[in-house]
Length: 552
Image 1 (cartoon, rainbow, N blue to C red):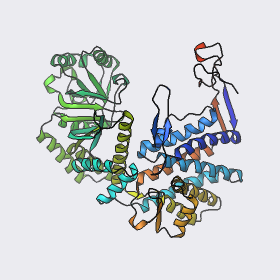
Image 2: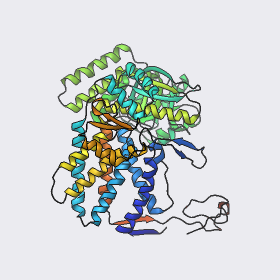
Image 3: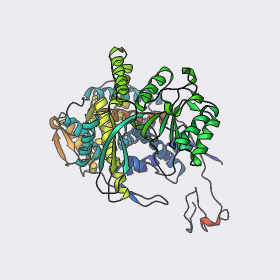
Image 4: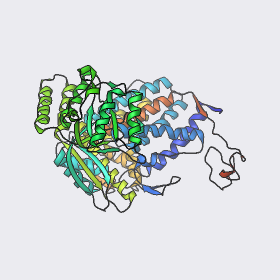
């Protein structure tokens, strides 16, 4: 397959065209007065959504270099979603405006090195300003403001999350399934979450987001299970008691893994294996938490316990184990209450004695995980799409609340970003950085302008009005009017703002440093290569059966 090479001017222009198309679509969904976007993918029913992450996923353009621009923004969106849980549209809005501003500076003859250094410095100062303006979550009103902002005013989400917080605190874990009724059902149970997932993708269930084991036995191994002989005897005994097997190990050798997978495939023994969390001494320490919770001990050659000699009655037990894409949740562990409480007390005492802040926080979090539990929501709705939207709403609200509780919050509605932009405009950096700071400030004010525009108001006018008023007022896009910031109820997690700015800056810096753009040329199918594709064939693998495609 041949490649296409573009120079800076031509490649940059086409990338920007793709970015423009992408961000104009996402902009429409931004804020409480954002519109819906209808999405239809081949083989699926059409659906309507206002979630930027859902719109960004699968966005594809036919033109190669325009689509590269889309792919770059999808990376920014995915990074923001993964690290902050929200802020997808905000980060892409800032990114596109920043890239355009930088392109203009280059055309004006500014040094690329100065622009690059200026972007990095402006990003650092912006984040410092956001951190300085942030507040801690101290009251129930703060919590409500974070959730309402995340869900664009849906109070029913606040009610269900408040029940979760009241029962589990901010360290609780939420799981979901889809119910049969239109109402949401919330239940609680003991649970412990681990930030690890499947050792092999062959354990996955087709067309499911997670793998579950009901009433499994639990094997915890601190080392690698190398040979089939190490678990052959144990698996035979587990089959006799007719229970699933949940394995936690550093790694499982090829033959031993094949044994588990073969038994699973034949329905002889339903099993799931995950990688042991953390590394070194920390790994063994966390495994001891799980062992206490499930009523077993940690096995392994390094501990002098041969896994080949393990008895079934030495294994742990749990009511249910759920393995998701990024975490594993062990529910209703059968460990004795006295042993679990003893372990919690030990972790708390170690946290008090620990001098390092990170270690102290880690130990405190582990103790909190063992003390709290798992909330399970059966999401109701009239249609499958309705249930999916409700689940997204709950997840967004809970994630924003946890991020806000952990790291603080900033004024939402673009106000905190506009304050940071004003602070940048008032700074006097070196001559080479001055235009970059001004450009960065314009990019930071863009989310506020988009919020206002989606409410039918001129964004530039609103921006100037807020600045001229000395930041005594902000624009409430939900109500479509100015409100005093002293009673401002719109809040975003600090982490969302910081990650959005960093992701946008990273894209601008890397794109600005690129001189040549290279991409593979789309494959063209000849008319007679695959007759099922229609008389005209298609270009770039994007044809529709039975429709004659006119090639360029």
